Amino acid sequence: GGLPRGRVVEIYGPESSGKTTLTLQVIAEMQKLGGTAAFIDAEHALDVQYAAKLGVNVPELLISQPDTGEQALEITDALVRSGSIDMIVIDSVAALVPKAEIEGEMGDSLPGLQARLMSQALRKLTGTIKKTNCMVIFINQIRMKIG
Image (cartoon, rainbow, N blue to C red; front, side):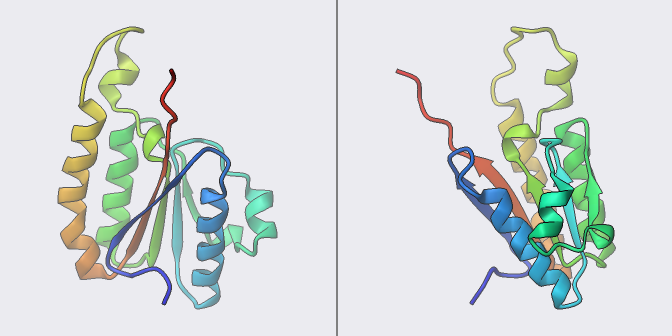
């Protein structure tokens, strides 16, 4: 049972449905088993006090708060390649904003940029994840359609 190692897992659901809480509990369990975990906080919203209350050994948790989607995925790639990380959580896919979008003007239309960034990253990561037996969890949100 449990979540598979050497795979990419996506946990998704509506806002405030406990996705981050679930992954923090998984991190706490991984740490209890002697594993090393990383949390890529693309949302810039990780509450370390809350994580500690859930049993996460915060001083042992590798935390990164990248500025762009590319940076987040490059950090993930480097951590996976190191072979010394057992699990990585990326919170969240929605917050992985491409550099071009951040540097662009408000209202610029850049269709498919984030989707391309994600598919490129997954193609690059999948083989290494399998080789290193690292568990990579992407948190994603479901957006309700307006209207």
